[in-house]
Length: 220
Ligand SMILES: Nc1nc2c(ncn2[C@@H]2O[C@H](COP(=O)(O)OP(=O)(O)OP(=O)(O)O)[C@@H](O)[C@H]2O)c(=O)[nH]1
Image 1 (cartoon, rainbow, N blue to C red):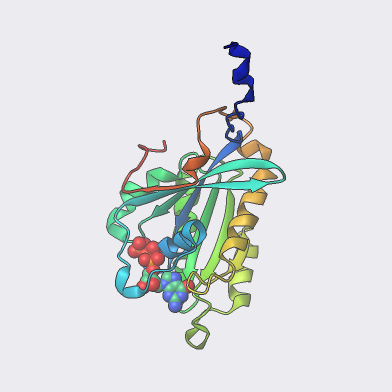
Image 2 (image 1 turned 135 degrees about the vertical axis):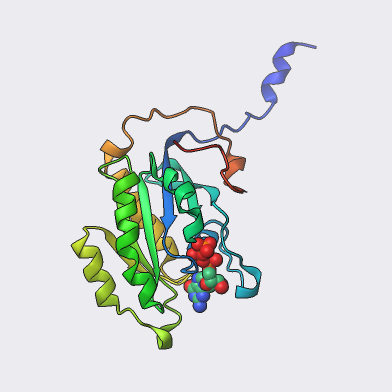
């Protein structure tokens, strides 16, 4: 039999090329809902309070994100809000293109602590152009609200950051927050121009992976 008969085989599908990889960090007080926002964004899922536990150190997820015909790989770093982990998690700012500063709209204290998180970000972030976004979470708890939308927006304006309110529980605003952040990173080439697209290093199957503490080594 002529070997030319093999030409009837269907072509092997190739994985779309990754245009760039972005490192995005979530920071903020313990209990504001950082892990829940991430879980909502990557898995469209919300764990009830009895099934959640405080993050130990740092957690890590990957999500592919398509924009204007290009595919981006988002590495999303969920840092522990608890004070005892701060010396460890501060090292993860290095090389980040985006940082989401989360507070809980039903906790004035978590909002007032934003100054500490901004200070930490400015101390440890190596990119001057890093895209910052302030996010007020838990807007489903409207009756318990302690931080008005205006206060949040004013804070963001003063610190020249993006701003959005959301609820990981009802999913309102979560996708939008991530999209705005990534769009802004894409619009800021100085943040990622140094990276060359890494052809063929990632398969489409890797849509979402999760691993625990310190996954993939230090991001330094
Ligand atoms: N009502 C409401 N509860 C939420 C929301 N997001 C998170 N929670 C709850 O808030 C608690 C803390 O959520 P986590 O996502 O673990 O908070 P975290 O900021 O990651 O906390 P650390 O890991 O300690 O830094 C949990 O009981 C969640 O179920 C929300 O949008 N609405």
